[in-house]
Image (cartoon, rainbow, N blue to C red; front, side, top):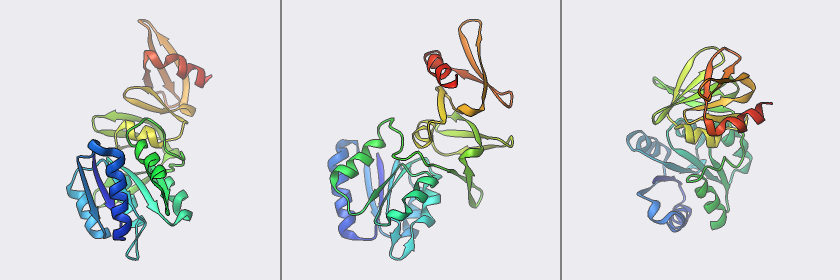
Length: 232
């Protein structure tokens, strides 16, 4: 994993780094510490990352200015902050976890383990998916998303108004962040269950979910019984 720690207090940054190395061990390919918002944004733009550990107060600068940029990236973001009242907003923006300061190794390990498991976020409160537009970021309300299609390392968000937006996160990472209202029906699709109009069995044991907008989504053979049960 390629990891970036964004923390302005050297003592805390060293503690986070030491614990992270102990917990993830050989799973770490690179681990970088940066203590300013500007440098962190530049580093994110020019490097491939798997995880950002982010403080929300950086020498008086608001880490939320970076959070929308971070959550639009292909990597997961874990916030480590003393500002517990900001946890709800952080989850709404799409962070994987919020570790309140002061923290112990057990709590950090719990958060780090989520990055390598299929476990969903600590709170499935993601309300927005941040997408990169030319020279700006756009927050797409999750309630506007009908289904999500995997497109290699990226995903395509299909919205209620008929528009399609590209997201830098993989389908697996979005599945971790989104609530159970979205189901992984197929290796390439995440679908909002409330949008399913009908489940259809076709010849050759092919299963399809017809959405309210008429779109047909394939259902994996191993997922059919589970999806059928949840839909009914």
